[in-house]
Length: 426
Ligand code: CA
Image 1 (cartoon, protein in one colour):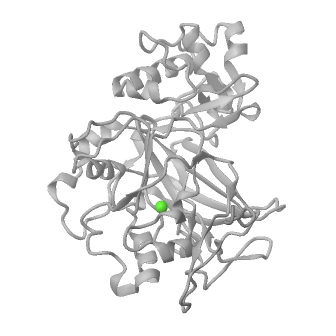
Image 2 (tube, helix red, strand yellow; image 1 turned 45 degrees about the vertical axis):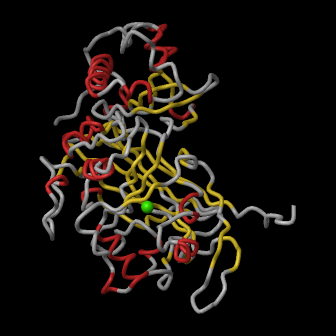
Image 3 (cartoon, helix red, strand yellow; image 1 turned 90 degrees about the horizontal axis):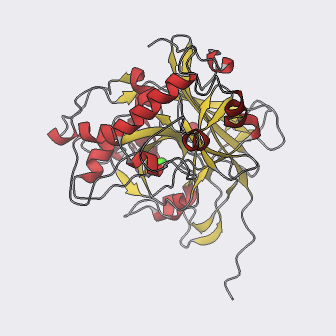
């Protein structure tokens, strides 16, 4: 697909994350409270205002006057396509001039991204985290259980996941507080209580469900694909020492529940459509319900930077690609419903850490530093095995088209010191 030209000049820069081909949705505020918007170049178009003025009509009732996109998403794929087509027509060069030809509306509806504060774009109704990247599962499994038992016996047959916490999903740039927990160093008989010493990130893509399914109504992979509204960058912060002690037999609990960051802009499945790509060959044939009817991964380059406190210079510590996944979001969603689990508008599914086969293509410090044994050297000469207080982790990603890119902006978080020791006597 070729680049679409907009009358918003910054949208035509080949390096912008937000050309007209993208049109990602986000919730922003300036002096007024949070409201729905769409990014174009370095600007935001106020969708709440466009709906109020009748320039964008979605349904009989206003749905863009809330500080989240859930009501719009619930209306389903036909409405998503109509809104996208209408916005394209309003923003394309020589298109409908209802916005571009109205100086008064333009002055009120266009906001510089620099002047806006971003908020969670949806009410996150539930959060499930998967473990669907073979490189990551093999690397971590080798460290936790040895090379012989790296991949659990079920791994090549189903996308493994656990039900996480929606309550602690936060917007990019929210400070991440180092968690306290039970720690049990190897060789010691008893655990002790302390702040995590092995704080880590996980580079993931988050899938946002636009429509849901009722309890007891499984969906096929093809149906699941149609329910996906879009994607965000996702950092599944992880306390490895807490995780290593608590994870058997029910999986992560406190080690992941303290924070999950997502990027501010939802890149729609529609914008990513030209970048679909096949998953790798299956080592074992999948059960029929999990087989894909068409390519369902996307070619999205991903990058992760680490910047120590007070430092200007980030170090790029990993580069990878979403096409390295073994299971797609559609397969994960299908599998999620097969036993009868209800899924809702605003459900968030984490892909699982996205690692590649090459050096410096792993999406976690655990893998990049070989379990802490080989610390990374940063641009400023400092070494890191795990994250230190004051470190900022920034993730970015984009799909590359001819002379344009469909980008995700960034997902970042800075590590804050643990709270003072809680008082258990009160
Ligand atoms: Ca994860």
